[in-house]
Image (tube, rainbow, N blue to C red; front, top):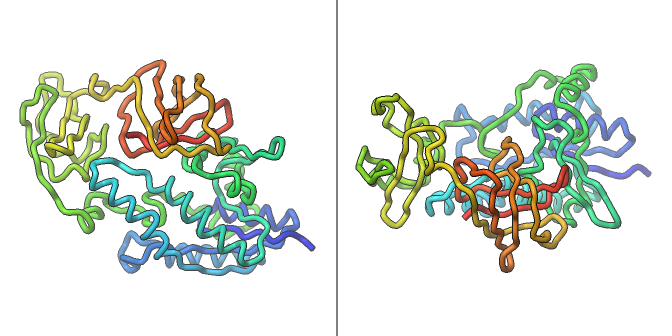
Length: 356
């Protein structure tokens, strides 16, 4: 009998081609559509209904079953509550990292195992390699689509059950395969925005859940230049939406968010894309998670402090039970508390922690 694989069908082209490839390889494929957000099902930004219709059309074309499951309670408890806590504390969390660890590769994986699956599969651009009985998380082949950064908290038990069928393909090849197979979503644009919540005006969205706490906005000399609406609504390196668009110096340089002081509720802004206050030579991170299950030795690695960033050469050293101290060879711009620093050895993703 062929092995049963449950594929997370999101309605997008990547997961659709993942299911197609597994079906062609002879697996017994079941599609699973996850509904994880219910607060505003009817507004213009929530595309759950449209996504489900797309996933159902794909399943019908490929010839597989599709089951819809609701993980909204788990998402709110495990992901969104933490997302709001971090924002209240003045940090900028990455919900996609937590969503992958808690929903896509935990709640989804548990559900698939109950369905008798041997593996789950997703449309992520990443790869898994088994060496000497241990599993490694590798970058996706397409450097412009590699999603290993978002998957760095996956552990050995999860990786042993995961397949990434499109991880060894370029995005253009995935689009071509979808078109040639006449998949109904072959030209559908990629989704962006908050994991499962979608694309929406971010400040207006946060306004619904977090109170505004105005405070002073000062420049790098401590001079008051305006008032912010609440530290939770800004992130380090932010340029748009600060409210100082008309205030420029003689050189006409734009303003950027440089620091957030929670104790005094003060936002520091600076002018110039590469202002010294925006640059950091080192960082500390907490809540580290390592793919192998053990922290790597102190050594030189490549590091990313945000998705799509080129690897930065650094010296990384584990500290205590779950800390990391990272010193960069060259200063890095807009290192943001709450985001993740992820370490790489070549194409192998080792894991990472939350920047503190």
